[in-house]
Image (cartoon, rainbow over all chains, first blue to last red; front, side, top):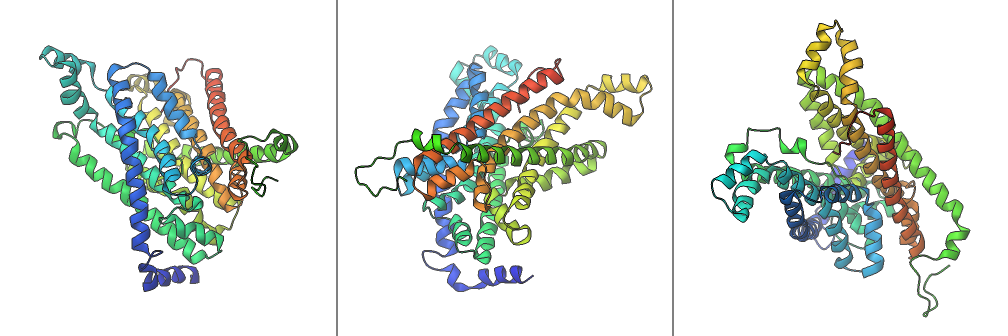
Length: 235
Length: 225
């Protein structure tokens, strides 16, 4: 019980809400590096996944990317990036982007692959050219899984960004890593709670965005994408 | 020990001389990695099978079970370990509570996918042949769900092998110990060996499970989740 009340007291202490090691500053750092990594990852991964799914070729490549992506030990990737690029944000960004790519490739591939061939044929019959068919027919139908991929990546990146504190990164991981190093179990638990809440908030807010983006016509049609999305957990 | 004291010393990515004198360090790490993974997947299966079957039989349990383990799955492993440490200490109990917790969502979800994909005609035929519910479950539904269950075990195994490295921060780690050593001593060889072996172990385990599936249920095609 004293442990829990210590953690409550830690959060109540105004000193933990100010300055470079305060919660607001750490939150900004955590969100900033995560958002940048997911955005860069999406620019690389989505065109690949969408193209593979649209042309329906190299399906094994998409599956292998998901297997290797799942096998990547985030801890090792971060430390390797640190050894290659040295101190700073660059190694963290490189490692997080690498970990963000596989879920987005795989899920967008599956999303486009699952578009009913009859629908594609109907689009062709109505005179859609290939690009229009992709943009106006296939992509809207694939939105649930494309978004599920982005959400999965984002949650993984937020989780892995915690480990970035091991290579001198900022963010909430600072409290966790410093808590371990100083055997300060109060700071450790406070940091862990902040990280868990941030991961959950990422999941929930991106689910809300997903619901907004899914065309009304297909909303009730199938099982929720959350349940069909390919699972990834690397941190 | 290369520590950068000599200014002209460049630490190679793999120092073969160090490697050849530290084989037991590496095999011990590998062994621990395998043990932690095996306990997590076996424990996860032991808990997921009854939960998945219960969720299939009583649909009102389905969403609560998936929701609870969905929340667990979302919690970053380092945060979960950190929250558990004051109660379960630094060590294997903390590691396994977390690792098993993560496998459950994957395994229950795939078990449900498998059970739900059994065609209604098959169930009707089994009923018509006089199977009672338990016998129908054991001899008709579960065997037909096996490909999806195998797919779940493969995902859970590969995921766990990656996550085990993070338990280095609570005093275990398997191959993660080597990564940690590389970080602390600023020494490339154990870092590279730990990372590469962890990826290789995951891919080999995946192939081994595909092989096991071909032998155990030769009628199934590969299904990847």
